[in-house]
Image (cartoon, rainbow, N blue to C red; front, top):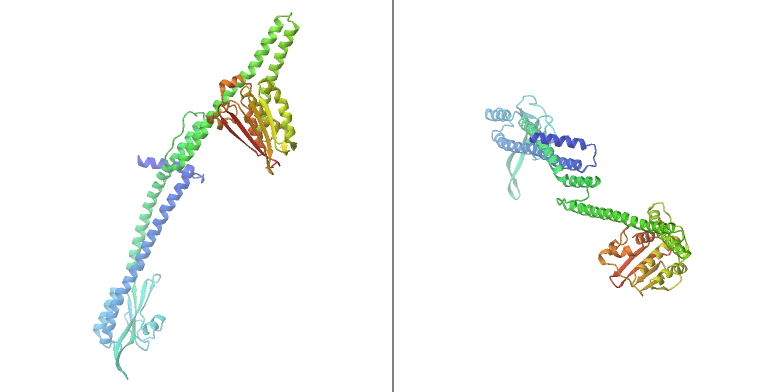
Length: 496
């Protein structure tokens, strides 16, 4: 079962290997590299340290034996006469023990004894021999040649007479040049290397399995998120996602759930919008149908009644036209290709003109409209869109005001921006709704909204127009006391 599971995971990983951007593949490679490199280095260091340490121990051991032998050479005066059977036996034994060669070099650099019998009687001059005559023991490991070469000084202590008295000094009488085989060290090293390779193979298999498991385990939360997003794509938007495995996934899921919630809200808003628009479009048509049927069913309708019905039909047509215009304005602003037709506009004159058109509506609702201008403001704006901004804000302030209410419009500017403030004494906006009032199709008081003509698109259109001018719009409100909208737009149009 475990073997089959690993095979499936390996097959699945191979399917993803072509995509190096995959987090799972990157985790697998990272774990594999982090696990494999230290194991290889560790094995190599162990083998290398073994060889170095073994050579050092072998040199120390042999040097100690050679120093003892050097004392014997002086004691038996071997440098003068190499006929001592005792010394020759020791030299042969040492040579056989380490499968090596020992050469005794006298003070005149002449080889006194060679256990191989090849260089006896010849002159031996080398760097190691010269350094050894100066009292320095040397060792040289030559793995390619298969031996360790050492030099050991043959010293004798002598008493010299000086003006200060007797003085003991050490004199180098000769040199022992010894070569010993490193075959046992090499053999052991090869065994270690084979074992290290086997160990590395086992560790590699283990690390690959571990990397597969960890890569699968560590990326599982992200796969859950992917499945949830795929479910949303397929239309399942009712269930919120919860993947608390990592703090990163928590942040991603929170953002996703917020987006999901917004999608649900937009979906509900669209459905409500369709319902509202259907109702708003159908109501004028129904009224016009009723009025026209009444006129057609009674040919003898008096002129006064006929005129009154036709005025009502004209009003319903105007209402229908306003709804359609709002929808077209919003769609036009949604287009990325929509450009501003910027020109220098006198904001004081434009505001006065807009208020002149809206004051008749205000008088019908017994609402006073005041305009306060602190200075003349000339700005580079799109006159049509600025008209939409001011008209929508003032129109809302009138529609949602109280009887005998007040709407105050203020215009001011500094060296960079001009500001339009629209303040009313109306019904106000609840604090919970302030963050949503710019959303399309959103209406605060739905029961009151039925009584007031509109589609819930005015503030969405206004905000879009402000943003197209690189401006800002803010709102503050208290229920029952009124609302203040503040629009701030650069005096000079900012391109890009």
